Amino acid sequence: MDNCIFCKIAAGQIPSKKIYEDEDLIAFHDINPAAPVHFLIVPRQHVATLADCGEQHAALLGKMLTLAPRLAAEQGCGYGLDAEGKPTGGFKTLVNTGPDGGQEVYHLHMHVIGGPHPWRVRFVQQ
Image (cartoon, one colour):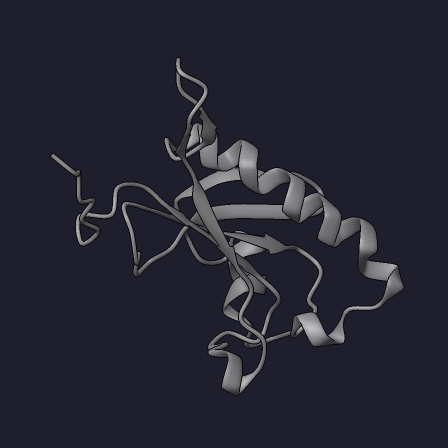
């Protein structure tokens, strides 16, 4: 698409803070992060929304989902277990679809959001 910002980023016409790229996908930091870690995983192929995906996109969608945990860990918000076996860390994946879904750029993309949440308070019983 001629006016698609993500197509231009994937083609190298607009700079980005890339963290990953291959023949199918590019991942880069969000320009307006919502958390300490916030990056996007974007297919190079232009698909407007998740609703436009069909069976022919299954491998691409799977690749996006399996890449997310690896990149999240590399960016410092991986999920794991601590020494006592308790869950620690983690991240959120988000795909906005259409205007009611909050989509602003009509090129399929996945947000990966993580890191410390200072607004969360954990209460400890004494």
